[in-house]
Amino acid sequence: MLISQVKNNDGSITVAVRELGEGARAVKGATSVYALAMEAANSGRSLKAVVEAHGLGEDIDLQDVYAKGLFLPPITHPDAAHLHLTGTGLTHLGSASTRDAMHAAVSKVEEGATDTMKMFKMGLEGGKPKPGEKGVQPEWFYKGNGSQTVAPGGDLVSPSFAQDGGEEPEMAGIYVISDKGAPFRIGFAVANEFSDHVTERVNYLYLAHSKLRPASFGPEIRIGEAPADIRGTSRIIRGGAVLWEKPFLSGEANMSHSFANLEYHHFKYGIFRAPGDVHVHMFGTATLSFGDGIKTEAGDIFEIEASEFGLPLRNTLAIAGEDEITISQL
Image 1 (cartoon, helix red, strand yellow):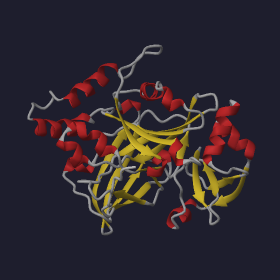
Image 2 (cartoon, one colour):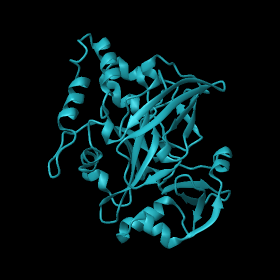
Image 3 (cartoon, one colour):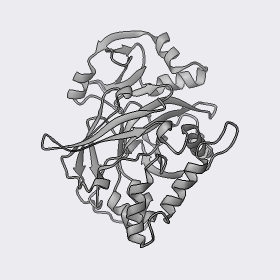
């Protein structure tokens, strides 16, 4: 089942669900995906069972919704500060090569001897622990809160001081925390973990700066488990023509870590188990246009698709004007 959110003229939300390849229908009495997910988490029922209990209403044309710019992120929180955007890197087979090369070039060390490659090898050796065992922890980063989420079809705004604004096609896990502090996974969505790769290339310790950017995910969440072998396509469209296009792989068959291991090392921190919070956690990629020498420009359209996850994710790159920041003494 795929689930999404549509913005209504009065500011309310219509929740749409469908099976892959079928038309969408509204969920009766649903005020948001968040409300449905919390109902499921707090009642001990599956999200699918909660949706079925509500029942389905009118048909919804999701292509028309997309064309009119009415998609919301597929989950939102009533208080944006309680939605957390985070991620892990160096998690996919082949994901270390681009970063290792650029970090080696800057630090003037032999490729394969960088901290990047060392951490990647740690994941290869201990990222898929046996049941009951604890695996090695991954690289982890913070992107922001719900104010940084961009709706499918919206602009990914790169700050004026950024040196680059590039796509990262990833799978994101979507979670809510029950009233008792237990994490529940809703499912997975295609995501664009938008980043500044030039800033990161200066020094790998700038990774934290490079990740403080907006992100987009959806338009639909696939409820339940993710396929083991996910195959998608990432492209950049400029002036109506495809500038760059490349396949990407995800799913545990193509990863050095299991989803369970990555989830454990995120939610092991009590701060990430606050009742009622939402987490959108991005699991990394091995494919990005920056690695092929692409320099993005304002107006470029990023399109990321994987057939099992519904409609493609599209966003346009925009550049913010410079902010005047004054720090005053109280």
